[in-house]
Length: 159
Ligand code: FES
Image (cartoon, rainbow, N blue to C red; front, side, top):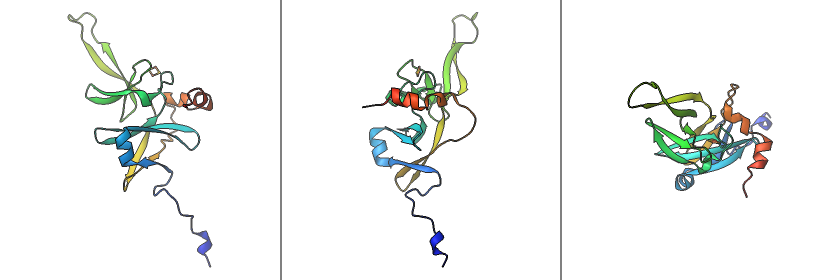
């Protein structure tokens, strides 16, 4: 017979996705971190009815984003890194900053700008109350990749 080729039962209903936890638990705690594939530390957040996933350590210098506050800047929800207060949009991983556009204008006015995508964002899916993350494996380098190495994992290992 050919039944020997049937795949083993999988705990994940989605290809290449990783089980993170029950949605109700993530909603309760607001955020969880998990090492995926043995090589990627990911932060999963629940904020204003939405789930988000991103690299756990800040693209600037590896700050622990799971300890950051979430605030709105220029109409966009951002995590604020607890180390040097960099602002990263939850949805896109863009670094936002304020700058004066016209130094001769009185009074001086600052505007928000984007530095582009700096933090790698991953895909979150919910199936029947279970939350899964699919790693964003785009080959384009993103600055937060720098802190996804054994070296930083060891340095920042939590008790
Ligand atoms: Fe995040 Fe510097 S490490 S702002």
